[in-house]
Length: 156
Picture (tube, rainbow, N blue to C red):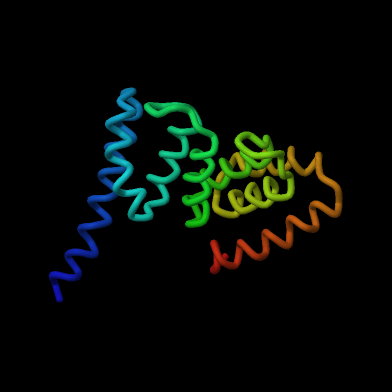
């Protein structure tokens, strides 16, 4: 039994250490090395690693800039409740970068979810995007917010 307890304590600690090491590498400008550290954690479903990979693709840090892939990595992380990634998804929907067209309903949805998750900048983005929306679009967004909120943040 102690073996299983040890595993449940050790594995998250190791993954957290890998993420922090990858952040340090990014700060040092060693983006290719950071990507090698992040990919295993991201493939295991770590939301922090997924968000950081999204940032790397969004900004072209150690990889070719790719809005499609950046959005995909942000979305993976967002569905796990990562507020920073949720703001990233909102921004992509708002600007329409890497998409056929902007989608203000989904942009607002993700900004609200990000604010619920604790991103302090999300409220500002939310206020800005709502100025561009019709009352019907706001109503549609709140339907999506209710759907996602109960799944992403079941206890809030």
